Length: 263
Image (cartoon, rainbow, N blue to C red; front, side, top):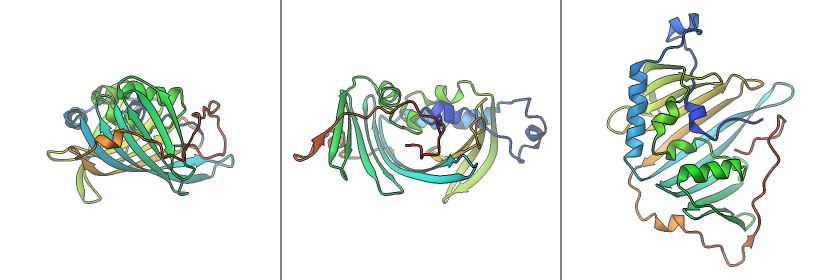
């Protein structure tokens, strides 16, 4: 199953009509964008843009729809360190225990598997937005919610936005958060943004209305740090002496199948 998870715009420019907004449930053909919802999105974007370097953890789960229509849930946990304009360090571990590390150092993209003790490297000069796009489109690397690293997140979120609702305050894992509802012509999204002086993402739920079986993607954020210390070495990769260098594997274009999507 091919999901459009690689670009945050496609994830955040979407929404669904909850019973908390009965007028939209009755009239989904009449989209509306509420200023209060945009205000929360703008505050979140501005707060992230103000930090050139930050760290966060994200626990994602996603449905893989089988030919029978049954949905299986898979998951990946990630630790992400962002340093604009061009550096990224991310560690990912699947629920089956398979782990990997990826580093953008401004000149190269590195990928390393400690379990297999192999690494791949390719040249890539550019800012984070350009490098992430290259990794996704050319190397077929999955990068869910990666546009959090973009310095202009608000523009990405609001591009092609059809509907945006502010649904009030909720508590997400002890954090009081503003609950928003967004929609485009492809997906429905709910997101929760912490209230107060640090409006950071706490949770996202995405429903892909146009995909077979309408699979769902879920992401829980934690351990935000807007001023991480001693991070320089994180963006430098030195292959272990006995590690084998291999080429990046470029898979065939994804198709609708019963295989787990490599998110």
